[in-house]
Length: 349
Image (cartoon, rainbow, N blue to C red; front, side, top):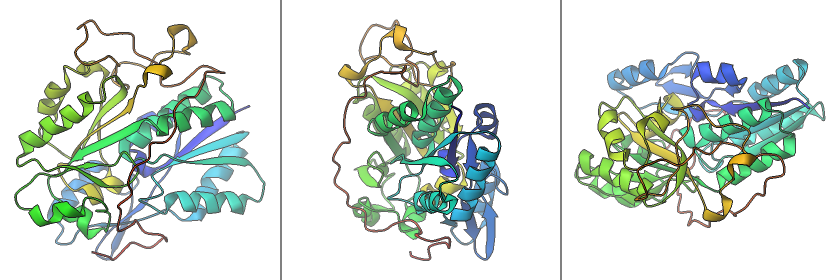
């Protein structure tokens, strides 16, 4: 059975990697004033941040239309796919997943599509997409891939150090981080999107303290995998990687750019760390692995403070029949806003 994978541009999957893995990426739209752009097609990350710096107005985003997803699904079925797994940006932050579900209804049984809420953004979502695509390439079946992604969803964490809260506030996505607004001028806020919603994580006073705070949050989870550093045109990526060195070797950390979809709300110079937490009872033995991930794309896991000799890197997928463990963490949902619930950009501030 041929399984194909679809996502949206919030996954921040590089074009080359998407092509290599056969992942279909449906883009969101970005609007600067009266001009609308299609993420990834009209705006590269570099072009977006350059435009953001020059624009007198903050950008807005709009979810893809159901028709865009329907076209993607039908093209994959026409190309020979038996089933499709569609993994999307957190449904608490965008109407994108609802568009995908509406597209499935429009297929009227023309193909089997499973839509999954990643409860995440950027490489938190992207790592789930990559794992699904690699499992599909290795011949995994639909139910196995769905189980794999759902297990990752429950273990995915995303922390971001913002240079400004203005973009997040303007777009109405500030959610549980609302309390940070009163101190905009005196802090470099850190947010936690691990629940799929925006929550306050910390209020460091300087950028250097914010980066140290990020590294400490990663370390506090103990063993992690698929560690990634994602940024929005930040100049201090190397410094942050140095802070993460005791947790994971650089060559095992995926470093990537945050694109326009997430950058429109996170703002310029945002620095993020994403990973999956490894639970003691969910560690998989080496012989159950299909294959290990290539260096630089997935985080090497080891317990902080353990021997400097790294343990073998776990694969980003489980072998057929591997036991799925864990359940979703209950997180207080304090979000007071939401991403656009239609195909038009939000005008809330």
